[in-house]
Image 1 (cartoon, rainbow, N blue to C red):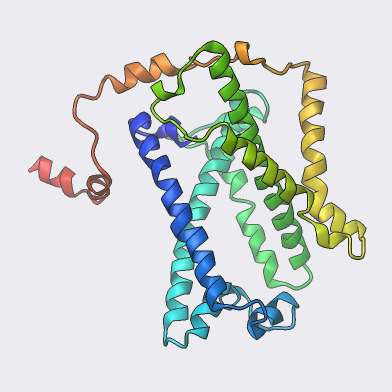
Image 2 (image 1 turned 45 degrees about the vertical axis):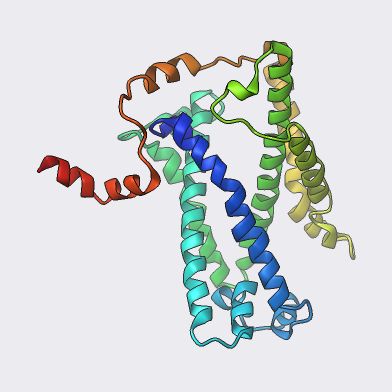
Amino acid sequence: MCSAEACRPRHIIKNAYKTIYWRFMLFFILGSLCVGIVVPWDDPALQAILKGNSSAAGAAAPPYVIAMSNLKVEGLPHVVNALLLTSIFSAGNTLTYGATRSLYGLALEGRAPALLKKTIQGVPIYAYGLVMCFPFASFLQLSNDSAQVINWLVSLITAGALIDYLVVCITYVNFYRACKVQGLDRKTLPYYAYFQPYSAYIGIFFISLVLIFYGYTAFGPPTVQGFFQNYTMQVLAPILYFGWKIFKKTKIVKPHEVNLVWEAPAIDVYEATFTEPPTGFWRDMLDMCLFWRKKSKQ
């Protein structure tokens, strides 16, 4: 999605993907391991929050903050909160961008209201305005009565995100099959993923398990509210998919029918216009601060 608006997408997006593995390893896997070592499962503060018996909420609730508090280092929990805020801000920017461009793309394909195609200086302004309505719903958490609304939204959006990842894995499997059938060597592409399609199959298997057992708490004891809060998206997604296929009379594209060329010639022409070698990360950061631009003007 970002490649459509990136300068030199084949270089920038490829390098960005190469860092994903290290970022996931350091920030998620290693971070979770460190927190798990410092915060035991029976930690009083953690158990009180899980059982709803603690007054700690918001900035005091994350396990990372509890871990820093257990280390008894003065000021360290505040540092962790500051880092968490920067991470949340970054994630919010990414999700806002993705949601806005998704609505814009759906509008271009006729799958969303045409009004969402309106852009101002390249920004789909109405799609952006619609997306920004949802972050304001977070203020519902300030009231105990309306907090149920935000809980429903969080559950539905989380399940929807899991379904997105499942669709990504399924899409890649179909892409892999199309490359095999049409004789396209994936090693000739700008980015080549290893251990495929097995990684995609593993992702499909585990994400499917998560979606199935996502709302296991709704069955002990069973409640209608708990079921729909945790499994609405799992039921709605197939209905929307097959409903679109039936009413729009579209078909599933077979591997030999997949268009593997698409916009590649246009991208070739675009990237051929660059004569200088691509700049690195830190040079781009300096460009953002207008350092090099001011120097060139002098």
